[in-house]
Image (cartoon, rainbow, N blue to C red; front, top):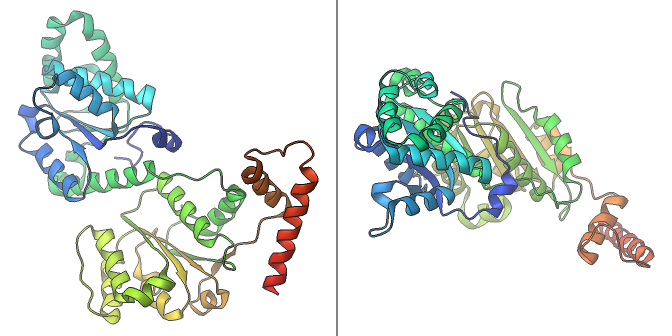
Amino acid sequence: MASSSSSSYSASASSSRSCKYDVFLSFRGEDSRKTFVDHLYSTLEQHLVNVYKDDKALPRGESISESLFEAIEESLIAVIVFSKNYADSSWCLEELAHIMKCRDERELTIIPIFYDVKPTDVRNQKRKFGEAFAKQEAKNVTKAETWRKALVDVSNIAGWEPKNIADGHESQFIKIIVDTILDRLFALNSCVDEDLVGMRARFQELESLLDIESPGVRMIGIWGVGGSGNTTLATSFYMNILQHYHYQGHYIVENVRVKASKDGLNKLQENILSSIFKKEVKVDSVVEGKHMMKKMLCRRKVLLLVDDVDTLGQLEALAGNLKWFGSGSRIIVTTRDEHLLRAHKVIHVYHVTLLSHDEAIQLFRRHAYNEEKPLENYETLSLDVVSYVLGFHWRLKF
């Protein structure tokens, strides 16, 4: 089992693809349609994942090959459920070959599940799986080599064997795989915005503070004056973390300063718990919410971003202390008030500085001229504008 049970994926590529479905399910109907696949499909639907499953999504009257191939091409993730008779279906083998083609050409993410077969049986076409493949090989000699290569390639992707996870309990395995798919979908639909000037250097400094791979729980504070980019930096950093690390739950509490006054802190506590546990949680009071968060999150590895807090009470209600969260959890807090972080005993604090002179010039050129270098004779004008803005900002501050 591995959270990296997919092909290498470039998040920027996903943004340029047309994706109609979150997940494409490939499976042998007679083996698992009414059992494992049905349970997996139902759980994904409950979590609002848009899934293509042939008996549910196939439009009547259309050519099955065209519809299936288009669905694969319009999906972010392909989940392949290998069973003993999977290779006994030419359609399953054709699906697999097209999925592997899309992995290479469209960077489709692949998650193989070896339901009642071993990866080595798929790779080498052995035992019951091999017998099923031999039948199709005899009927489709010209396609057999393409199918065989696809089977070898997919079996080399780190996949999942239900019998080796959660002591073989299918319901627990489905929960784990669905959580992984949700995390993967979130990561595929988010990326670091390289157009944000100065972001990369600030990311490196934050990574050092957060020490993501170390055990235990760590909370960091990000503070800076209004307009300095606290929220943009924290949100981009949060999404970048999700691309590379697995958490059992994650949530962004946006604009706490405004939403706490409008909706109440207990509503924000509800939102955190409901999102992480993927079911509606009711919180009647802030005191009850604190108790529930501590009890429900203390054994879960979570990633939480609490954005724009301006009172100690908000922090105490939404991220009381490190003991609220399970080992490996990371909590990011943004605020305009450094003293608030100190009062909450946040040890690791990052000060968001304004853009340097060179970064400011780069930002101005990019937006004023739509290029990194200014038009001829505009260099002096660029320097004058940036110097004026920087000076005006400091006069406002002091």
